[in-house]
Image (cartoon, rainbow, N blue to C red; front, side):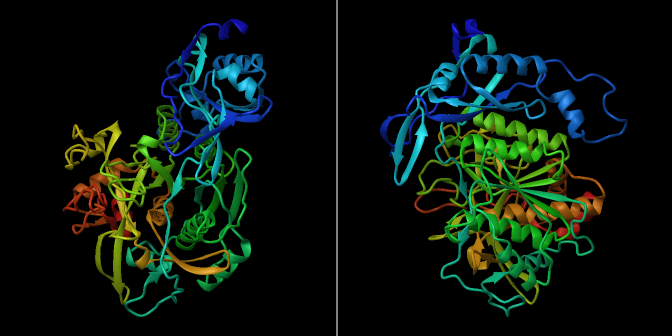
Length: 530
């Protein structure tokens, strides 16, 4: 294997730079321990005929591994290379096309040609790199990505706490500031004859945790049992509550309480991972290929502007979302809370958030909902000057997918005015002032943001799956067909996602780059998808 290291090439899409506000503190000591995930290509040969059961719509996870997993010979060659550089193999999976390896910073440099350094950005100290990763030319095309060398925080959660916090009462009078999740479900006409039984909802969390005592108190207040809940540790992370509602606990509890209250019969699995590019990828991969718990829908309330991701990270995570569709799994992703800018503070440059911009994810935007007497009075684009606005716009990475042909995706606001994948696909209540009553770290608070919309739609998909008797999988073609027919959604036609003084996209009849097709009409969706 020594010969492999003599001729090297840059790994496409692996270039990174330090954040503009980061200060380099010094090199990482050669003996410092690091762990990485190495992503491999799919099998180069086409699937063999006759390996799927007749009439089967989705592959089983075992079939998927046999047809579309990594080639065993590729895996052996990469393992041998890593070992020759002094790295230990911690875990390997043909289905996930991944090798988890660990070793010293010196060994990482031998393997990937990188010099690691410590950086300070604000209060955060992280291990980082600049430039591209290199690999042996003999492994060109076999290794698609290397993740984890850089452990800077990679994603943001999209929840917003209403200020000042106010605990609402279930069934409060008109003018209430918030709703319980079952009240939201009722307003949107979610089916009441199903409860998600037989389904499993996977939640991706990049920090924080939950307390069982809080969940017991919350669900008791709703008259519901605590959902069947499992925490899965990925890359050494764990259920670790602490830091108060403003921290990642707020995201974790919001996701569990919305999903568990709307689909109380479903099992909920929380995949905890570090907030790094490797952690994010490994958590989604673990959920998609979990052959024990078998989630049928995955909710992701974390992300970042497309331009903050490396090309290899976007390609890898989009590929996992595509895997999910092949396995009959729906991936719901929050579209972001920073308007068309997609960054905080906002800028003139428009950005959509990834992974919501993946054409294989159901991108979930936000609305401002007003209701009384159990009925919706009005619903507009969520956009409050001081409190955030729904993400949405046009991808500069992904081209226009076939399911969005002919729906009027606008040109990008940026120079060149390209037309690409439009974001979001769907929407739901996200305004903190008409948000969700939840309990976090012993406090009853009101929370909004598109973080709430992803588990809202995930719970709805679980109900639809139960009603249909089979999983929906990648739902785009079916949902867009309903949207074009004028069924399945509350069309949002007022508002925009501009954050002054910067431009944004306006709402309009039909699909738009603020709220997609609109908020769900649950009964119509069940009827249309059945």
